[in-house]
Every structure is written in structure tokens, then in C-alpha cells.
Amino acid sequence: MPAHQNAHRWVSWDDYHHSIESLVKIVHQSGWQFDQALCLARGGLRPGDVFSRLFKVPLAILSTSSYREAAGTRRGELDISNGITSTAGPLAGRILLVDDLVDSGVTLQRVQEHLRIHFPEVTEVRSAVIWYKACSVMRPDYFVEYLPDNPWIHQPFEIYDDMNVERL
Image 1 (cartoon, rainbow, N blue to C red):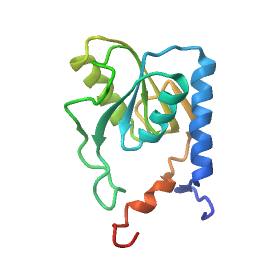
Image 2: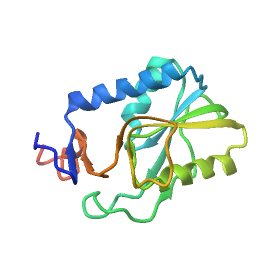
Image 3: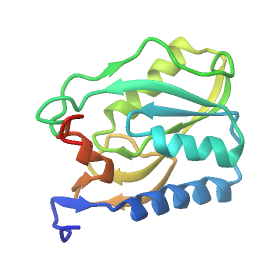
Image 4: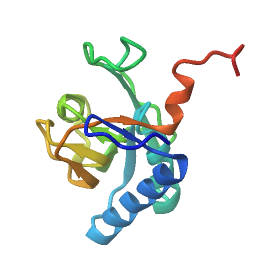
């Protein structure tokens, strides 16, 4: 792993999994009970899966995308899918919104608005992320690490962004 710099942080698989488990512990220690975990794909898929398994709640998936340009390093227009995938029926009750990080906060803000408009059966939404950057317009309810210097986080699965099946 390269050494951390102010503008960059590299995360190993071990650190990544440990951070997800730390986030689970933080939410558990809060005492808040939720009915479903809603992860934001793609970054929230792995943390959402862990929350669903450990808390024994259904996992719902909402696809969002804004980092498509320049190999996923430049933010573009935010797209939110029209539907939510879940085997538990319609999204309802208390929802834990799970993602890997909150950067600008725009995705978190817009998804919460989307849920209020399109899912009136949802009674409460709280958010949980591993990394919370200072530049965010929203503060998540639960987070593992606050990043005052807003570094670019190089997550271990990003090795696949510049790869294709032939290179594998």
C-alpha cells in the first residue's frame, strides 16, 4: 500500500472489512432498531450485505451513479434508479441507508428526498457510512471516520476499474 498523503488514502482489504465491522458496532451501540438495510450500489453493496447478515434484516438495493467519468474519479450528474431491488416487498418502516462514504453529500441528500417522495411507507431513515468527508453538505447519522482533509479514498476493489476480463 502506498503511504497516505493529504490528498489520498489507500485502504487494504483488511482495513476495509475492519471498517465495515466498526460501523456495524457503532450502529448496534446506538440502540437504534431498523427494519431494512438499503444499500447504495455500488459502494454500499459490501457494507449493506454485512449489515443485513449481522442484524438479520432484509437487504434492499438502490443503484446510484455519479462517478462515471475519468475512470470513476470525476463526479458527473447523479442518476438514481427508478426501482429498489428487495425480496422483502416494498420499502417500509425504519430504513438504514448504507454507503461506503459521503463525499459531497449530494447523493445522500437526493436519495433521502427520493425516499420521501416515492416511498411514503418509510417512517424513518438514518444513514451509515464508513468515511465522512468535511466537504459534505450532509452529516451521516453514523460513521467510522471523519476526514477533515477530504482525501480521495482508494478502496481495494478499485483495481477492477482499470481492468477487463482479458487482463484478469
